[in-house]
Amino acid sequence: MNQTTNTRLMRSQHDKMIGGVCAGIGRRFGISPGKVRLLAVVSCLLPGPQFLLYLILWAIMPKDPAH
Image (cartoon, rainbow, N blue to C red; front, side):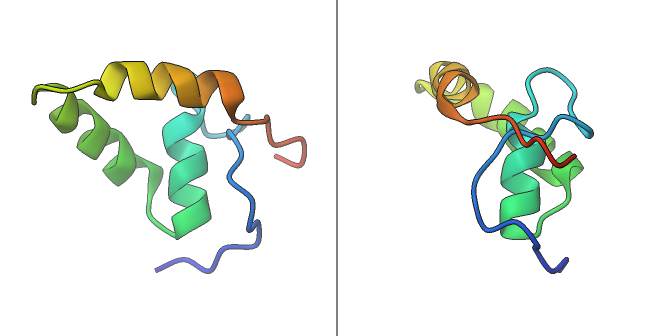
């Protein structure tokens, strides 16, 4: 796994597809953003509030100014 340099959960401004939420989660936990994105898409096929959770995280997660 990758060693994380940023211990805070922040949206990525450099490696984002839509809002940077998945890239920020991946960087925080040392997982590739692609795996987090795949997990997010697959989880949206299951019943539950996954899409709403993504929107909430997009709204409350601060932007990462360093990247």
